[in-house]
Image (cartoon, rainbow, N blue to C red; front, side, top):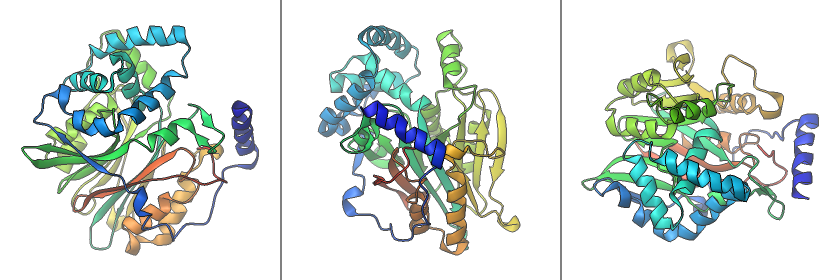
Length: 378
């Protein structure tokens, strides 16, 4: 029955299009109970134990979420996956390999299942990211993280089962060393990579999946065959947060490093004009779009499709997003306007788990989202 309802909704999208509404102006500030809690990860601790304290209060919810993933595999496939991802885990770079092993131990789950959970985010993330510069030169970076497509539909709550469970375990993470914040992120507990992050006073960074025929499966296949020159998308983000000391240094790394999956890296800095969308293939840069205030480009918006191509009619978040950003105007760039843009359907949809707003001055603010029916499934 759930599958019939799901495919019925997909059919309606194809026939009638997405659920679109007028640009919202009334969603900020969001309810206090949607604000993400903050956990601390101490980078001075051994990788195997860095996540112990953060995971403990959320253990049951994380286990339930990973069960949602494994429930989509039959027993034979799951048995094979356990062995395959156990082996894959031994090839992952440090410290991430040890962190995943530590997470598995803290959760009481097979290491292969936690490795599978981490790799899911390399392949199935749908997003919208925006960078805007206000008239004073202050940069703001916002994003919706949409996840859970085709991983079970909860008819009782009219939403994706995976998205529903992710809302229980999404937190802000304060990565500290020697008692000082090194960088911050919004993240799903149990996942050790980064998709949304800020290094205060320096730069902000989000990753959007790039829907492309040369997808992440090709990169993973290369990795399995022994090619270790490429970087895992979420691990590269953490590497950049750890090592890069400036916007320009982060930009250079993101443009040159070989990747396992095609992606859009959306990077913001601390000075006027420092905003860029880097369209990446596995081995090369396909396109670079940058802020240019003198030519009137005061914002950048990226979904999951190449900027030079039309977005598909069944998933055009770009056009409504652009309309709403322009309606607010440069004079209103800030947390209020960007949150409202990202809270307007279809950028807000049934897959949307959280919205984050960042700046190098203020760090990160994040809130869970839950799109009420009528609402596009994605």
